[in-house]
Amino acid sequence: MLSLHGKTVAITGASGGIGEATARLLARRGAAVVLAARRSERIDAIARDIREEGGRAATCVVDVTKAEDLQRLVSAAIDRYGRIDVLVNNAGIAPISPLADLDTEGWSAMIDVNLRGMLNGVAAALPVFREQGAGHLVSIVSVAGLYGASPTMAVYAATKNAVRTVHEGLRRESTDGVVRTTAISPGYIRTDLADSMTDPRIREQTRKHMDVAGIPPAAVARAVAFALEQPDDVEIGEINVRPTVQA
Ligand SMILES: NC(=O)c1ccc[n+]([C@@H]2O[C@H](COP(=O)([O-])OP(=O)(O)OC[C@H]3O[C@@H](n4cnc5c(N)ncnc54)[C@H](OP(=O)(O)O)[C@@H]3O)[C@@H](O)[C@H]2O)c1
Image 1 (cartoon, rainbow, N blue to C red):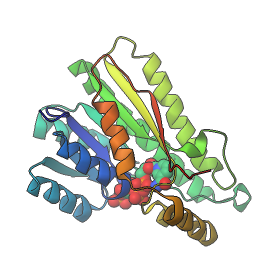
Image 2 (cartoon, rainbow, N blue to C red; image 1 turned 90 degrees about the horizontal axis):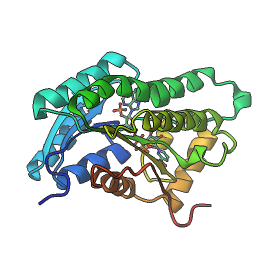
Image 3 (cartoon, rainbow, N blue to C red; image 1 turned 60 degrees about the vertical axis):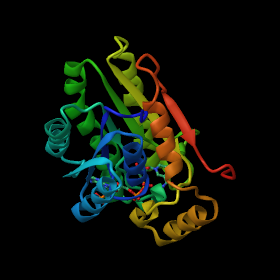
Image 4 (cartoon, helix red, strand yellow; image 1 turned 180 degrees about the vertical axis):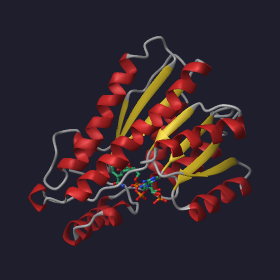
């Protein structure tokens, strides 16, 4: 029996990187996956691939900054597969820069996607989880916020730490056993995340780190699968996944 058979998992930011790897792995382990992102052609192609491999996959075009898009995603999962067991809040951007640059647009964008996007997901999924009597929220945060913020990462790390705090709040409000929460903190993972970095020097530096030390996004996908494969009375609260060689 496949370990995730019977679970329906919606994944934001599934058009590439960690979200795509997670969708592919969870589908291989038996979950029905609903891939969400703005780039419809990419999620459609990945879903097609998954179906050709024998998996179950649907898509939903979603901009996580829009609350109604997350409502549509949850409805799409229920319409297609009858329920939504897991929301993987993975969509994220990292237009990082030194605070002194005053990139207020980048700050707002990170708050809107990384934090408000997650809250939009909570608002859409939580009532359904409660109605179903079960549900699991997984967020992809970052090691960037774990030990205070390193230079250029302050606002990015702040958004990730805010998500961590919301997770802890949700966990403490859910001790009736209905809702489980898992926050996964990746280190350097080889994805396109550096493309969202506006400062060319930081972008190139990050790309170099990712090329030299980065590990594949499947490493994070396996951590997501591990959290989802636990029995109902076991909650994996936090996992850090970083390259062995990362400082
Ligand atoms: N790579 C790393 O080293 C690393 C380390 C720590 C944490 N993380 C976190 O891991 C998560 C995934 O990032 P990644 O590394 O896989 O980067 P990625 O390849 O750039 O993927 C980011 C995903 O987010 C989606 N996205 C961005 N803005 C969105 C919006 N407004 N609405 C919906 N989707 C949106 C993108 O899809 P569309 O553009 O198609 O919408 C894309 O699928 C992020 O939360 C990131 O902060 C990554």
